[in-house]
Length: 348
Image 1 (cartoon, helix red, strand yellow):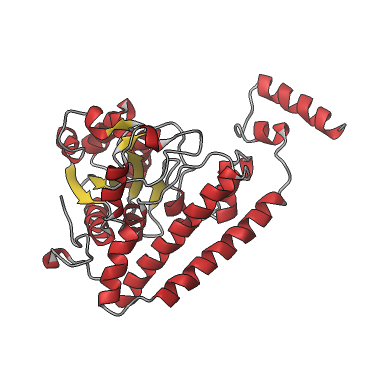
Image 2 (cartoon, rainbow, N blue to C red):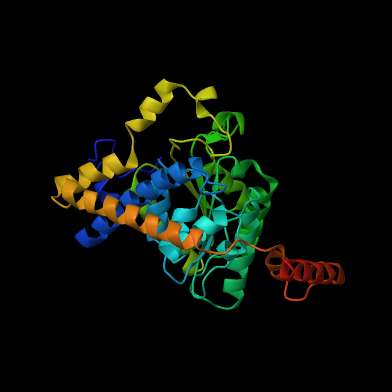
């Protein structure tokens, strides 16, 4: 397992330390703290009934932020439904992510200039999409990469193997990140595969593979940076397995992690908290303070409040609006339904 910082925030692999300025190190921590607050607020809003579907991310900030910080703005992201933080830092507005949670069609409209697909609900489907987008970039001669994310459960899907095989065969500029947070809902990772690691599955696809400490944001950054460079240099795709842990439930849709996880296991992973680890490292370099962190917490809370205000002022979605975005040219049956609902809605 590739690691740079240990649980106490001490450097254990000096040779692998990425070339990041003090300002960049602070920016990574800023994003991780901001993301943790967004997650806490989203869980609260979900339990109040003010959001729809939501998959918590606490515990995976180092994996998400470290990997995203290593790609360029021009690169593409093909996320799963848990990967909202990466989209937000890529330019997807917070208020739209909340509309996406609520199933509103406006939440599924990526702003112009944001190179990203809408979060994939079908588990593993984004792996095949990534292979296709990456092949398109290669055929156009673009110096861009595509990064995609799934969990350990996603690595058990057929789409995962098909996508990796296609990407390897066509030598496309793709980065496949499997965030192994130990459980696919309630099924532990060691019951999903007999392989010792998910990273080694790269061998069968003929591509690079690496297992990274997913609670160490510097290690994740360094591994992703190398994978991106290989991709744009024409050296093919990489599979990165980040070992991490989700502190909350799989989603707010009725999952109770106490039914399949022990308090002892939770406590053990709490000691590896990515924010605590990176905070200790920055504090040892006099780059972080409690005051700075509190400012970020307040900023994130204010942004959530403003985003929710915009969401709650957005008109409810009409059935006709949903039908309208089903395609550029609607088939006859959908066109008939569209006209029917437009007439119905205009009379209400």
